[in-house]
Length: 95
Image 1 (tube, rainbow, N blue to C red):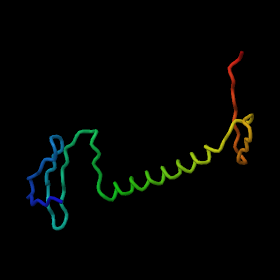
Image 2 (image 1 turned 90 degrees about the vertical axis):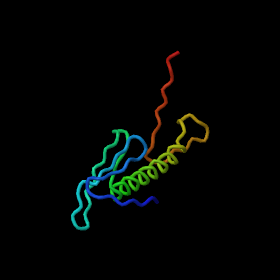
Image 3 (image 1 turned 120 degrees about the vertical axis):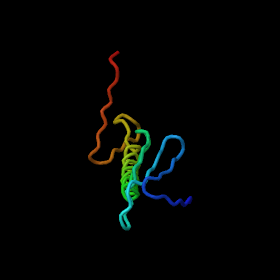
């Protein structure tokens, strides 16, 4: 971790596209200004952690659904046993 000291009005640059400026310091609160391209995500740490957790939860549900879906076979498939509540419609092109 790089540790820098900055005063109000001073800043730093990350790469060529991100600029961070210390706007104001009041007691233990520091206000920062961040200039970055739109394609660069900028989040407070606590918000970023919530987003990451939501993404992990969504991915877990998707894996579960994919596992269930992997067991679905067309009705005319040999040994086709479908879980209750699931149905498959097979459309074949007209001859």
